[in-house]
Image (cartoon, helix red, strand yellow):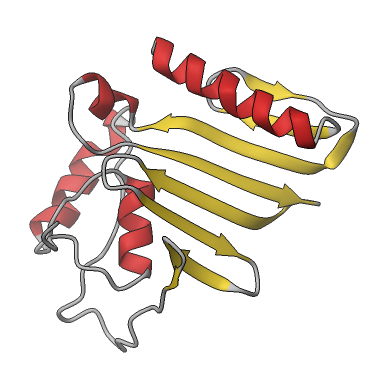
Length: 161
């Protein structure tokens, strides 16, 4: 955890508390901040991709979701390096910077790009991951939340900016 994680988390919590003081907030950095309304939970990773950020790799994001009675209803992933804001609302689909996204209609995996993340702290699974990667053609771009958004929207991982 960096000072940037802590500062971003503090700003996000303060912003939520101004409008929704009764809601519970769960953060990756400091854990649970209980509110009087346990049915509504904000789940926050203020700097998803901290290692990339520290190493000056431009692949990090802010991830926030709202769960109501245990179901995720709204989620956002913001990539500040690309100024890309992915949003999704249950029953209303997903958007990128206000434009509706559509998933690919591919019926099989031939020619598709898969998005995945491999936990870098789970060393016991490294051999399995390498076996999987050895059997596929892959393109790595960014960090998992952003890759999932791009894959889900049909965006190619190597598109020019």
